[in-house]
Amino acid sequence: MITKPKGTYDILPDTSRNWAKIEEVIRHVCKLANYEEIRTPIFEQAKTFHRDEADSSDMVNKETYDFMDRGGREMTLRPEGTAGVCRAFVENKLYVNNGVTKLYYLGPMFRYERQQKGRYRQFSQFGLEAFGSDSPMLDVDVITTAIHLIEGLGLKDIRVRINTLGDKESRGRYREILVKYFRENLDSLCSDCHERLEKNPLRILDCKVDHDNPVLVNAPKISDYLNEPSKKHFATVLNELDKLNIKYVVDEKLVRGLDYYSNTVFEVEFNASDFGAQNVICAGGRYNDLVSDLGGPETHAVGLAFGIDRLLLALEHEGIEIVKPKSLHAFLITIGDKAFMEGFKIVNSLRKLGLMVDMDFNQRGLKAQFKEADKNNSHFTMILGEDELNNGVININDNVNNTKETVRLEDLGNYLVTSFAKKTCKSCKEGK
Ligand code: ATP
Ligand code: MG
Image 1 (cartoon, protein in one colour):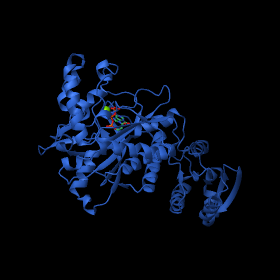
Image 2 (cartoon, helix red, strand yellow; image 1 turned 90 degrees about the vertical axis):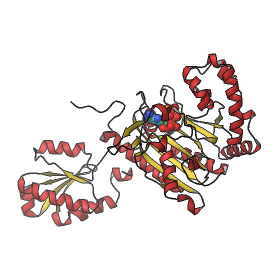
Image 3 (cartoon, helix red, strand yellow; image 1 turned 90 degrees about the horizontal axis):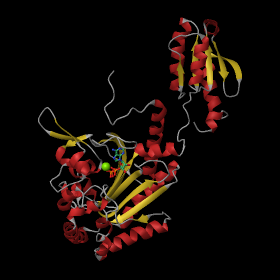
Image 4 (cartoon, protein in one colour; image 1 turned 30 degrees about the vertical axis):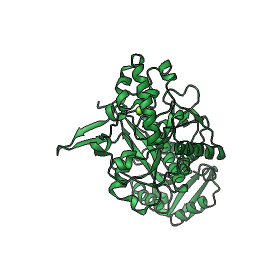
């Protein structure tokens, strides 16, 4: 038997319905806040992610799926959405309209990671990217859209952690102080952090190996090195979140894995007990240099990415049902070849009227076909035999109201459409 690759999983019909629903909610929330969809390739030229600008995140260094195509070109399966969206923003000159461009994306990402619950090698992200303004209000626009989605899905136990990395100037100054400090304490750092020292010393603060290391705990704090504009930017973000009644905690250790962030960074955790270690469902921040790194004009931007797999695990953990089980408007049972052939035509004509209809394709016995109708949670079961066909009628069982009727074939469509239009049925009332 051929099996799925390690770190991947199949989304079967029972859960694919949830995926479709969550995507619907995402699209709705984006529409309300004026984010429009962008679809970029799933693979990009390797240099889109492996840039010279000293990107030292684990994701880019150790987790990418890199390959050479048959033409000898270096390619990378996208591990995240932002770099590809920025590449497309520059290549398609979306900056020419000179205003704010608000985009969202949805789709699979690939990282060669150790599989755990909530951590896969193929996973899906939903992301927002807002280009063209340095206003702290745009940071808040992105964060509130995330909260809107989370609330829309009914998730309660969440915590927003937020921090600022300061602008380029502040971060430059802080970086120097930090490198000096860590160099003096080199012996107490893990081997990964030794590597990080030159490339991305801020990441040392976020070292997963030894959180409680006093050298990390007592490290200089960015808040002591922020210049006035950076302080003001962060204060405005926090102030606006307060006004919107969005709860958050400022966490000075939050630096994010990727290098391109500046000023605001944040994460949203799902905090229910026994959910597991992979509880960050959303992460983001401001990145004011990435567009220019990719060859575009200097463009301020802010964005975020949700892990949809983790979002669904959180909903499941809370027992939040976002989709009702499937149901059909009608299911057709046929007796005999002639009814089977004619029945197929009827099913298709009903679908053209907008009804969800199916039939049994194996021409099994009556009992098996009734069972199939049941399994499909069908409101009506229609029964067609040769006698009915000869008399131009069809028998209909209303499984919700427990009634039976015989209807003329030429009236069937009208009969079903009207009965659903009246919205008398239970499933209609429930909005299925
Ligand atoms: P982590 O610290 O968990 O590795 P990250 O910082 O690498 O996360 P980001 O690059 O910020 O994650 O991606 C945004 C979101 O995508 C994460 O908050 C998470 O919800 C989700 N995500 C990231 N990697 C994976 C993965 N391998 N499997 C499932 N979801 C993931
Ligand atoms: Mg990661």
